Length: 285
Ligand code: AMP
Image (tube, rainbow, N blue to C red):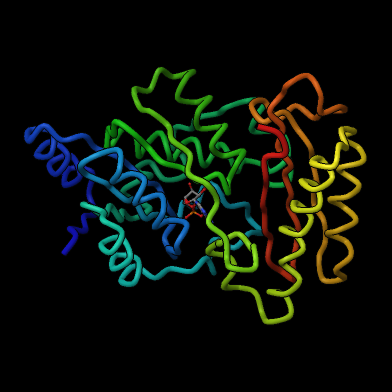
């Protein structure tokens, strides 16, 4: 059975033992409520390293005051079984007091610019919380490689920028989004959806598909593509759009035209009932 530890000292001991055996160490940060998307990150981590460490921590500092921190699903026993099945070698499941020993007076990491747009504009402080907890996890585990999901597209860019700015010696890998058979991106928050909302939620994937089809058919005006994203999303009365953006895939700079050999990403956020969902797709690679 996979070992589950709660203290940084126990993580360091297990990681040091792995290094003594000449092994490479990988980290998959998660908030638990694990699904196939997480399992794929763990499998990717195992592919690249010898010891896959999975952290399970619902990080309070990345939730806004009116967000779902209290009701976020917590299912540690089930998560540990999934980690084991996916090939994890160690699960790190610390308490809030362990991760934030100085409580609300914590030291924070800010990644300006990228953190202030799109998700960051809708969720002020979110990426400050993400960057802070991920740097803490990097300091505790000191992995060679860390794996993130494309599902959280902006998050992965924020982490890459932080790692470069702070010279953190870790390689960041991104794994593709795992979807349900009908296309809905797997998410821990999907379990909040009732039957009607689960149907409505498909509008995010449909919108991205419609955008990809338009680009394949030669559409290169970003505003036209934004309109397609919005129209598809708002064709479902239960879906409330937060943003639909077409942006440079590396900087998230909003685009007006898709030419010039750029990589381009479409990014969506919408409220479905009381559940907030995000999704994205590369339009040009
Ligand atoms: P979370 O537990 O939601 O904080 O996510 C932990 C990691 O899993 C993040 O790097 C996410 O981007 C990634 N992830 C979440 N959902 C998916 C998915 N459907 N496919 C691939 N990776 C995912």
